[in-house]
Image (cartoon, rainbow, N blue to C red; front, side, top):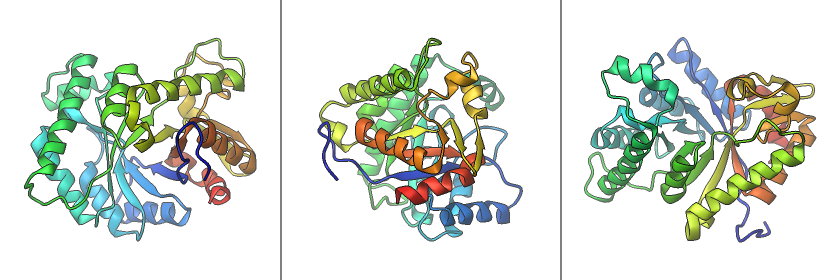
Length: 296
């Protein structure tokens, strides 16, 4: 593939986020379906009130042959670095090296979860500093004589929306995942949405500096509507309540139209913005499948 803006486009990758299932058999079936539909990665979230992520990742990997498994994303504030490093290393071992470690600082809405866990809830700045320190400490532990042993570089994904968090991601992560593209309430066209997308990627590029060429860029797809295959905009509406339905359709990461048209949009995102890795919600897993087929 031809190099553009100093970066050679990477192959497309697709992940699906799954939050709940009623049994081990149901988790396994969801993983097999994701693999059959062409997804590369299946991810689980990290919230109190939901199932513990690491045992689920092992179950998902056991049910599949090539599907990578990941966290989208672990809340760093729930963990001490040495204990988290042990769980990460163990999970990578038990999944035969198919783990992608996703970390985040913890969103504001997680405050009740911290209270239930008996943990202090620091300011956003302090949570991001703790994430930075956690990454540094885990990398240091893995570079030494860690038990269980870590025999490979485990890809690190850091997801976020704000400037401070994206700076940490750009400095440390193998995968920088954009949890959304900030826009104003004056967004009025695909062009203004695309310009906002370009500005966000430029921010990451500047923050990453010389290592930008080594960074994989990811985008959370907040809405998917594929003609003849379903989908909806409910996630985009929840994340952007101040925007009208028409404005939601201008957002980068809100995909709508024919499968071919959406595939062309993602080619544009990759070629012009260097974003090759896309995460969809489980509700959109089937709707996105024909797009994945076209992009292979």
